[in-house]
Length: 176
Ligand SMILES: NC(=O)c1ccc[n+]([C@@H]2O[C@H](COP(=O)([O-])OP(=O)(O)OC[C@H]3O[C@@H](n4cnc5c(N)ncnc54)[C@H](OP(=O)(O)O)[C@@H]3O)[C@@H](O)[C@H]2O)c1
Image 1: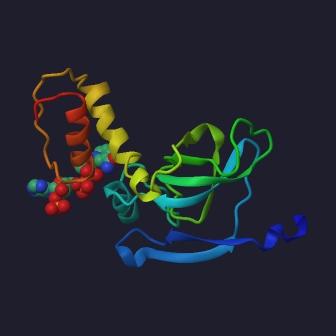
Image 2: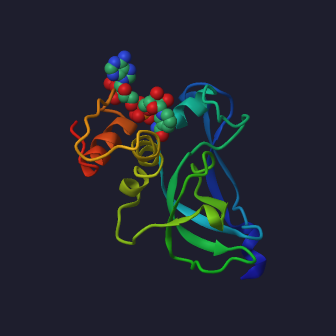
């Protein structure tokens, strides 16, 4: 019902000031409406990685001005299309890397920022592939331009990027 749209509410997290976990607040507000060219996504899982914590602390170079909603990456389901959007349907599973804003029930993003995700994947598992694995992939294939059989030393191979480097390094047939 068109008239009831303004009563749809959602929750999101806000970093009120740069600092520890006490800087996080939950706010309830009107659900965002997608603008022209945007898609509203219902977030199923958002990543929690080192850059999210650095942004909360205000020490990451790409930290937004406080107050802001954190959340570097997400996997969600297409919920509503803005004007001029085509080629994507409500119900489709997508991933995105908005850098901030993913710690929300709903987020509106430009259609061009959405990447389709195969259905049937667990959203919390799939979201781990977005920031950390893109970072690791770029290091291996765009910066180092690795080739099969080469040796690689991975520092801190227990963390987000380090674990991704181990798995992507195996796929690239590196000697680890
Ligand atoms: N995540 C990204 O997409 C991204 C993007 C660009 C750059 N980076 C950079 O990549 C690096 C790793 O980031 P990350 O996101 O993978 O972080 P992370 O998930 O926190 O992993 C860091 C790993 O390093 C280990 N570690 C920290 N200090 C150590 C020390 N002194 N000796 C041995 N091990 C140590 C940690 O072990 P414990 O857990 O036991 O402390 C953890 O396993 C950081 O420098 C970050 O700024 C990350």
